[in-house]
Length: 362
Image (cartoon, rainbow, N blue to C red; front, side, top):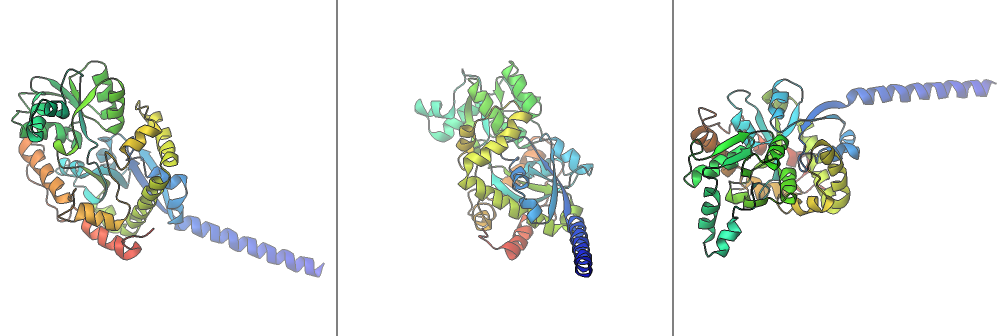
């Protein structure tokens, strides 16, 4: 009885220690409210939750699925801490919200596509008639004159439409009519007969193509590539850098997983995407865009090469300057160009990430 009693006390003590440790571990988890939008690329972070990778980093992540233009409102209202968005959104809303661009990691190089009714001609069709590429791009874009374009204003989508129209000599206010809707609403309107041209995200492009519409101008022919990444408020970014670095580490883990297990990763993403939207994207459709129409650097070294280097094919400053020009001089949404100092944080965050995880951390 004596021995049994001692053992009982020891077991009780050990259970109590484990229970206390469990409570402490739970208390030490850092909560993060993460805003994502229903696109095949911006939903990628949910894979980190699916496989428990955020928990391994000590993060308790809550995902909030938001429309592309709802992200800014949610950040401003304090409903999310960080979100996936891009340079265009930070610059377009700067006068109102003054968000910061924390880190870019998804190059939307050939993802954007101006979709059109079948009777309009693509860049490639103009080339087949003997035009040089540059002239074919101008001719394809000038087809918008006198027509209605459905897109999402004050985003990279609206920027691509209005900016490219202005570059080929069209007056965006006089020569084209823009119907401003969120991507899903815009696609529904376009498929129902509203407008002759449409520009949305990849899920919408996929659906429009399946319905018989065609891409007439694509990717860099519209504008320098958008860079999707993490945006936040200045205070949150300054006070939670370690949390941000952990989110980035999980991001690279996700991208490398999908690189090696594309079918499995796509199935998880598409289950959410096709429930949230009418995209009806297949795994094969996902694989067509993965490292094809848009690119995902696999580590910090590739980020340095492609985005941060002046010689990178998607150098961030080219996008920043083009976006400032569009929102100040073309659309007039903001009064002055948005500075990079204190707003574009990626270079400093990248240096901190490399110090913590290395350039090619696997």
